[in-house]
Image 1 (spheres, rainbow, N blue to C red):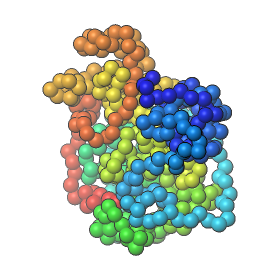
Image 2: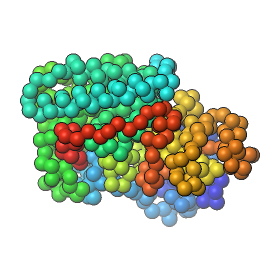
Image 3: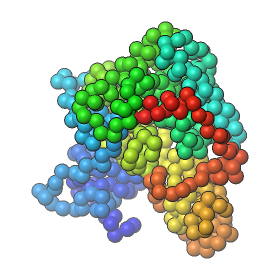
Length: 469
């Protein structure tokens, strides 16, 4: 334990401290896997129910001081271009909306049915099918968007069938779809925020064991949630800082989308409800209607969480992207205000601390990329270890399985890392998604045999530019 990490009794915690470790595995508690700020007395009470002592990081939060000396806890970093109602949206463009005067009814806890879906196809095999599904889905989404924008009829059954194919792929092997979206990260014209957010939403629904028809509706709604932005001025969408007047104009995209989808006459009300309510928040601070609590449909609450998670952790959507562990921490701190607490906790459990494609640093100092996860051991995934000290970071990587420590040590020693002989090989930390030139194509070419497809120009590129926010 670093000298910056101090062990204290739970009853000695005070507001403003940063809990970085527990006296038991994170997976045995409802808390995020990488730490969080103690912001309310309830946080301390929750910890008392699970732990006798914890570790605090004095470089991130307050150390053991007298309660009378405490200042307000440190604020979470501001993220620009981040549709997070209730917080600073665009560098202070709007203040928090006051919560409704009447306390909203508390939503019922999510029903979690474990073991409903198991990984039935290996990632290497499912990736081949998933790539075909993604390609077809992109084409159908492009066609549907064009036709809806023009007010024309479109082949909704064909579009829905593609969505069902995506849901089926994620149910069989969620890591395959996640990896393919990471592989296409640099292809900004074809792989977008809505598709990633839909993936996180479907992974969550899979984790809690929702019925397949509900998962399909959730996926459809999340894919179509931003379609109303096509009616906004491109200049408004590109703004990184908005005046209150601009922000009010921007927020109209939700109702525009609802109107466009209703006009088709073929999209189910349940899907449209996801679009209508995905920007609403538990405490009533969302938009466009400011509804709260159980008045927000469950699928829309899930879509909202998935949208925020992808926005703050993806370089395309945020000017200040953060590592997955930090995104998890920010999301956790939004529980019981923006989002329902048990939904946040189970969402964090569903995506894991190190989602497929996460850039990590190992305890040996090596740099690696998470390839896939063990459902029963999320902190010990398979990792592609990169040649951090070679001439080319992406040449000559090796694949290790952190769950098999003996084999991992042998592999690292054979590759010239003699210091791995007696060490426990683990992930020390995840890294910000920018700053390293990782070539996911080369990793895929070896690991999966999946290669980059030529980028497509034209309609989808135009739509993507207009959908930027």
